[in-house]
Image (cartoon, rainbow, N blue to C red):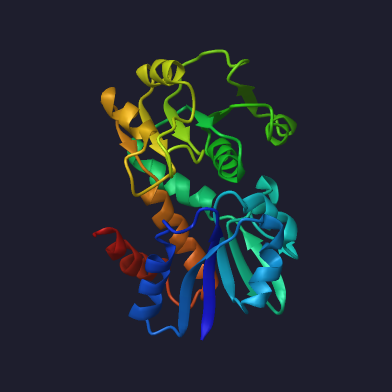
Length: 263
């Protein structure tokens, strides 16, 4: 039996085991997917091999650590510097990023967008900024502090702290921080968020499964919004395809995974 897991801190909320095990069960694949709480991202590689895993997903806050610990990184992850999917290939740890394409697929229902404000500056923000720019949507990064903004500045993304941010209107406001995941915090000051939402067409919180304070504020201004469920599904489909070496199609994986979002 092949073993897979998701590494994160926190990780108890993750729907990933339900999603991936539904595919394994439906198509009689001898595999099992679990959760692994990991507080120290630098230990990820050792834990991966100690558990004799065939692959893994990586969530906050370890995506950048996962990138550094891979033997090889492929696809868009090379440009992002963040990995959310790991696959063991002939004893080597191969890293991918499925967040980026998953997010673009989830964004399609909003229609045409020209620019976006990404709140946060972690691995998910890197993935979304890169893929948005590739799809002709201009991203701007807003983070609480200068910490983690170097990557964005080096790659010519407009990036600001709360103190340096020059207010502007954005088509979509995207929260990539963990604010609201296990607390009642907003990802940025309430007055600034209210002002930003008043000019926005839509909003996305990458957190899923709960009405975060961010989304509660979005609902007040009555604009279209999504939590992270669509992105989670789409990135999961891509990750599962990598886990099983393309033995079944994307559509077959989607059929099984989508049913886990009905309850």
